[in-house]
Length: 512
Ligand code: TNX
Image 1: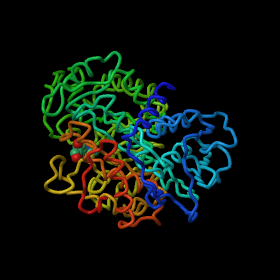
Image 2 (image 1 turned 30 degrees about the vertical axis):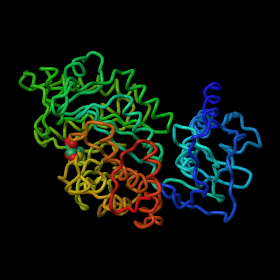
Image 3 (image 1 turned 45 degrees about the horizontal axis):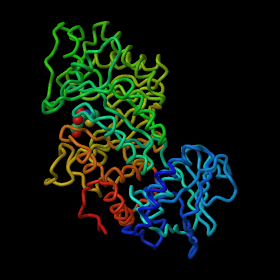
């Protein structure tokens, strides 16, 4: 490591190094908007070559140091336990109670930066804010000459909602571990704390299940358009989980049931009611497949699948799909979904389910994910009144796979066109009629991948809209203001450019 630092420093001294801009980034640029940000006019702190980091959580100090060593070329030692005088201190003491488990307080004074939190997740969130308060070049991969100046003041920040998710559909098109990890890095910057992986659909089964190997080796052998597909070994999946966990992101694995199961029905003849394996499918229709709800082997199979996923997943939730089961009779759907919720519970997890679960009987602890385009759904409202919590992903605002405009090169439009303002302009706490904010666990931005084949595609659709949904999940409603948000977004453009994110340059935003 020292060798690398020395090399970077040498290259910095050799000249030809770009300089970071000297004007400090204002607090008003931070995305998502902090709950409270009070600048101290005139005060600044400059991160100099001798800067050191003190950290109560060594891994978080190391992450920050790794990022800043790369961009500043400074040595940046990390001290755990903290030493009193370091320029950057990340502490699990002294934060006000109000910041809760995920929030933090950040102070920039003339003598340094102190981030205080009650839990490691809050410290991590505070570090994301700290990075945004530095010039974008601080997150770059090449050495840039300073000065690295931070604006003074205090940010006291905590999320409006505990659940802030993004879903990636790795079934319609497969994405490698490295591609998923790249997306995880992008989510973490905007304080998204849940990665929902849509692991199985008609076109592909993407995770090895021991004892049912053909699900992956055959069911994962293709994708939309007929390409080779792919799948994760359990070790691959565990690597994604660990990578996400290191960024305070919880993975929610989804096996979509009882519809969206053609890949499984193709892999094992016995899962079909007629005992005949279905052909693999590479088109984009929905609603044509169903597991055989009357066969006991279906539940033996699901016990293995959900049991193994539960063992590999530290988070609380298994997502069991439940959407668009047009090929399952309503009574069968109801009995099936009730039984599968119990399988999840038996493995120590709660079920997350698309909102159609309200047509069955949501179990205690089941969370329904709303994805429709209406704001009034009496069955969902009744379930919420009955104690079922919701995650909101209204397709006409939160679906990252919708086109921005009719000329977007990729994406769908069945839920309408979703420009950036449309993604941002809704209030999750008062969105569904008859649903109180207290019934809403949070928001999620799903990215279905029928038309998405590369990381560049993912990023074009996710940016800037992911930032909009992340802000709706984190920031208090009192900060909700399109003009201010669009200005905050504009300040992210240079960072995205630096990170190689080919975002959609929406004409609704005045990019720098
Ligand atoms: C509907 S939304 C689906 C997915 C498709 C998506 C395309 C939902 C729960 N199901 O199967 O991929 O539309 O936008």
